[in-house]
Image (cartoon, rainbow, N blue to C red; front, side):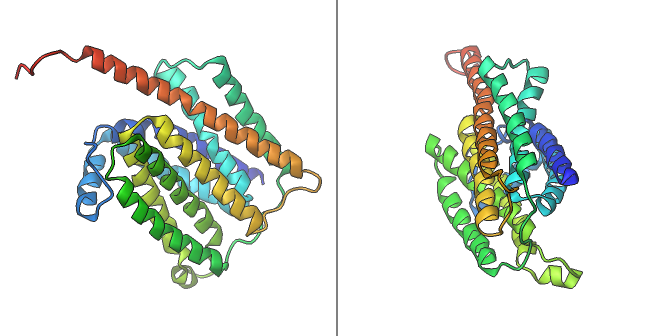
Length: 296
């Protein structure tokens, strides 16, 4: 339990730093990018030319290594709640590196996430099944197809609703990563290579990463991140409890629900700090832009 929880919190630190770098790198790429096979290669190539994006990619890969450990050792609701703490890390780093100031409400949200995670850690029981759930594997495959189709349509729009929808789809993609990690077969390399989830795991992660990048470049970080955090936390948690039989300590059911809700609410409140920074930067750049024709 302690190893898994430590891995989840370590992953949260890496993901929290990566979120800022990914937003910076994604916004340097033209917004006409979309989830289209004919343009996807050029979009990915443009992203890979951005130093901040490359750094975010490295941190996310390292974070996933720790997240994978947490997913195999902890109930899904605890592992995913631990990852939601990445928003706390991002908020605290922004106050240090970017000069952002958190309001009293946002500091209260930091405390709420920490308390919620503490309650979840105390109330968590043993993790349930970790492999051979064919119905759930088929569900992940169908979900990936739906995400690709809907994402291709949503990425053609610059409307604010497309930002939220792309973020939501990214959250479902990351949920697929968490579920696939729990369904991986334990055994030989040949058995591992024969399992569908061996391939749905990296595909879900890559798809979610691209969709989140598309969302970040289209609108505010709030619109992109709120649905992503909500879906990547709630979906695997529900699957873990209702399908994979993740356990809660006897008599701690209400406390686990309260801790989960407290963590989720605190995480969503913390998303606000990036939107404030984004809005102020946009206003500053608009005011600084010279009027009239370009002198060139």
